[in-house]
Length: 331
Image (cartoon, rainbow, N blue to C red; front, side, top):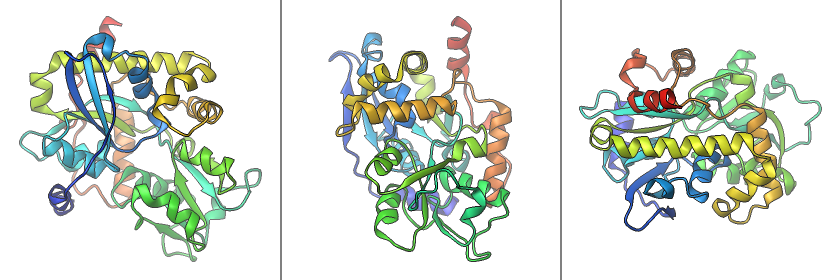
């Protein structure tokens, strides 16, 4: 993984800002996200409803297209905060100015298993035997979690014709699923999963997050030095996200959809509401930004199962919840 990290850092990244929010004289936060999905609805609601602006923050948002690329963006100082998989922090924990998780956003896998056949009423996980399944990028939590679930059903790559395919880049999975007749299933996040089903290009047959259980899937991370020098900014940032969480989990999905539509051009409010309902039903978002040791240990179990955790990395080495604990105490 150290070799992979070195290669990753050497790559040239071109990221296009998607949003700018806040007041002109406010503090700017360059936020790099692993992908753009309704999975991160509390963040987008905080942007669109002005919760960051209310706290004097400008947030520029860019879609990096993978935790590896978000990590590279943080390490190269082209981003201040990363919304990413916790595995990225684990892989880079040996850095002198190491990355730290300072707030968790999602607590389970947010992807849905999509089939080319309409088997919504009959699907069983055992049906993946002998099939080609696009699982995600090697070393990424989407792929490792899918492998963990399939292995739990006795399904292994290369056994009985089953192919757990981790060769396709995360942001290319949907197009490869659609264009390649040899692919039977793929995992997709919202809004893409609902979009594919509504247009007849695929059928959602299962929730990976429901099957895998609670795990610290996506979190806000930053360098130790950034958190030390910008503690007040990070605190306001987390407060705004938590306000977004309250809105997403307490308001009707139709109202949440109206707050999200500016972030998802081309998506109808109806489709957005369906996706919000799906994620709320799965108990996706964290009521507390503090990652639990129990869920962290499950993540390590998932990584060990995939052969990606070579040495144990203690919980205390990847977290800094000083700010999160202060917010929860005051709340």
